[in-house]
Length: 410
Image 1: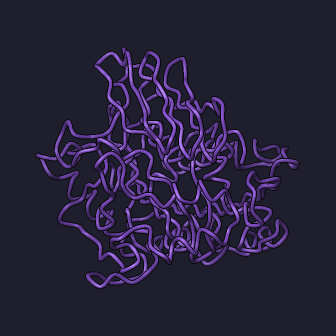
Image 2: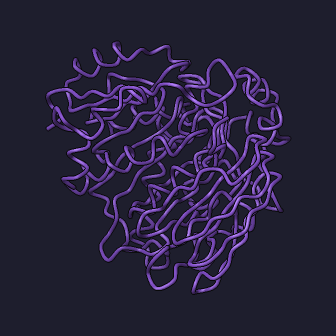
């Protein structure tokens, strides 16, 4: 399953994504200050904490934090660090500032350490009351539903991991599929941060992508993820297939203007992106038609027909059936600035393991994901050089992935 067996398994281009809910234990309603999930607050503005796929607690100097995820446990060390273990793995630990370690999928060992960005990350669970989505019957109790159980079985990953991926409750906290999970900086930057609306794959939950979403948040982004596992379906209390992702933006905008919200004045609603996986990737592409959305990242879903600049990601053994040459053709034919990444040698056990790279091996996608947003929203030249030019940073790793961009991306 790879070294970072952090979460994940199973999807399909418009039916996709199974995720673990490892990080919602002990999380309160974060619509009010002081009730968010964190794992040791940062000390001295360095090494801000990550909640590391497990709900934790820590004091103001980040001296300790413990984590519970799946059937494993982990322990934080110092300076706001935390480790977690999920999916049946044994404990993992971290050391140094601002890192997170995850292990799951039935494996053992410390797993892969992902160094967080300068602001650290915190996850706030079950937020957004007043902006509820309509929950489909497959997401109502009892869980796991037979629909999602059958869906997981299609992908041939470890059955023990599959069962844990379908867990919707842990230590007394249950995911409310009508609400949202927010991934935000542990230490807020001095200026308002860009906002990313995230779409889960079918049967997935935000924590299935927790390593990636925390990483993005740690670079000064506000990621708001509808908890729904069917984000591309029509919402009976709204209009449009991307409604849950767009309603997430409605919630973010309201919270930004609400003096009682912990997010008040912290969000830059002029810099909004959409991002999602598989079914949620298709929904993210649809959401890009909304006037508020400026750019998109599409994981394992579509490679064309996106209204705004976009990065499309797929790879070998993906249920999409994409090829690197096919993606290159689609990107070159796009009418907006666009790029693609096509990963080789995905980790995993099943025939469709290439659909799960961002879940089973999130360390492979973290840098390009943040780089895209940094280029688009902060005009960061180092990130620009990662994507643009004949000698771009992504241009010389053919054994790991194929990369290409069209001439509109400048």
